[in-house]
Structure formats: structure tokens, C-alpha cells
Image (cartoon, rainbow, N blue to C red; front, side, top):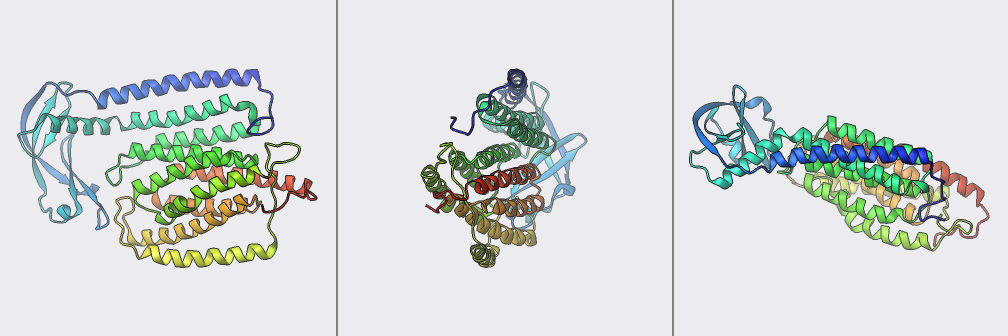
Length: 407
């Protein structure tokens, strides 16, 4: 018996296909990563001063309010662009419609612009790195997207004998779709953090979440080990984007402890025939009503509190949208708490909570423009259906099992 579920005899043809895909992904990822890194971190040696030029300010790319920490102002002349970064306080005082830019040219022909003539070697290297990072953004984004897909295929290859054909197809389909969306719809930088880093966190979150979901549907207690990595990733996303603080606090003080406690509780309730399966059960009607009331109260109270906080972030540029997200976040965190308790007590209703969470999270993702995370929600909904059916069948066939207790 495996640690992930019932053993499935591996198909040699499928294994061969997986090996070919792994080799191709490894080659593509390595090449893209090498091209990106070698260009961005190339040492600046020979530079020459070209002269000074007057560049006009492009206000069409400016859409900043008091919630923005960093404001990038674009100055252009022909095909040349100079991006100068200001704080919001500096930005509101900015009246000039043009700027005098001092131009330097690097050995590879790259032009660098500064607001002063005397530039140190460190400043030159930093400016070159920033320009190249912008030029190589699509290649870098492609590299980090395929890295996550490579890891996904590797997991299915190494542990493929423990998953059914449907589970493999579902897992790899979601990750392939997430990779495609990540490549086609790259993330913008926010709060001084490069969009490539943000996209990496999104894709890592998708990978860990759907792997965790799959293990839950298989009634495997090992899902909680993956879940800890999920919580850490989602805390990092909240910190980087400086939003969804209800979710971050809930994750830190509820989800991390409940994952550990749930692993212990699930370990105590192994199935007698298949000891890697966990015995699961369901709620009674009046218990469901009480939980719904508690969720509504939590949403109103916490949503009202969060909407009154004065937190600045570049990620969301509208106060009304911030308020809407605060209430949605409060509701999602409340449902999340209920979901965590359902999972701890091995209750089938946790799948209903997953449905609600997926819908709420999808609304937040659309409002925030986090389209790659919509793929994760698609994974939630499809696997939630699969998990609900599997758990329902198990409960139906184990009605008389004396182990159907909370503890």
C-alpha cells in the first residue's frame, strides 16, 4: 500500500511519454533561463557618453493616487524611453512636461538614461540591469512558468503509480493551462517587486494548492504536509502585494496550526481495510445552519474593520474596489475557517466550503486582475466535484462504521 493511496500499475508507454516531456521541458527551461540571466546580469564594461537630450513626459501611462507607494513616470523621444521613479509625494509636486536626460551607451548598444551627467559604475550597472530585465521580461516569465510545469510533470512521473489516469490528466491539464496563462498574461510589478517574482508566487501557489486538493480527495493525511507549503506561499503573496490581510492573519494563526492538528487527527482515523485512507463523515442539518450564521456575522464585523484601515498598496488603485475586496476577503476567510474545521473533523461539507471559497476567490481575482489564479479556481471547482463524489461514496458504504466520530 502506498503513502498516497491505492497502488496503480504504471503504464510503460505513459512513462516513456512523461520522460520525453520532462527532457523537453528541462531543455527549454534551461535555455530560456540561461538567456535571461546572462543578459540581465551581464557586466557593464565599456560605456561612452553620448550627450544630453530632451525627452517628453508620457502622461498616458500614469494612473496614480494616494494609495500608490511608487510612481513610474515615462519620458520618451522616438524609440527611446527613460523611466524615472518617484514617491507619491514627489509625483504630485511634479509639474515639468519634459526632462533633460544624459545618455550613455553600453558595449552592446544598449542606451542608458540618467538625470545627471556624473554616474558611478554601480549606478550604471543597476540601470543596465533594470533595462535588460524589462527587455527580457517575456523570456524570464516563460522560464519561470515552464519551471513550475517541469516540477508538476516530475511529481506525476515520480509518484505516478499512486494516481489514477484521471487524476494525472486533471493535475497536468490545470498546470499546463496555468503555464499558458502565465506566459500570455504576465504580471506587472507592484510595491517595488518585479512582476516576474509575483508570477512565480502565483504559479507556485497554483501547483501546491491543486496537489493538496488532489491528496484531500484521495483521503490522504499527507495533504497537510503540502498544505503547510501552501500557507507559507500565500502569506508571501499577501505581504508582497500588501492586501488581503484577513486571509493572511487567518492563514498564519489558524491554517498553519490546524494543518498540524489535522494531520494528527487524520492519522488516528485510518480505514481498517486501506490504512492510507482516512475515515470521513458528514454534518447534520442544524449544525450547517449555525455555521452559516457564524460566517455571516464574521463577514460583516471583519469586513467593516478592514475597510476602515488606511493601508497603501500599488496593487489596487481604487478605494471602492479596496472596500469590496475587504468584505469579500472577510467572507472568504470566514468560509476558510469553517473549511479548516470541516477538514480537521473529516467532514464532507468541506467540499461545499471549497465551492464557496472558489467563487469568492474568483471574484477577487477578476477585480484584482489576477487572471492566472483563475486557473487555480477552475482546478478547485473540478476537483471539488471529484472529491465530493468520492467522499460521498465512501460514507455511503461505511454507514455502520463505528469510527465515524469527531475524534
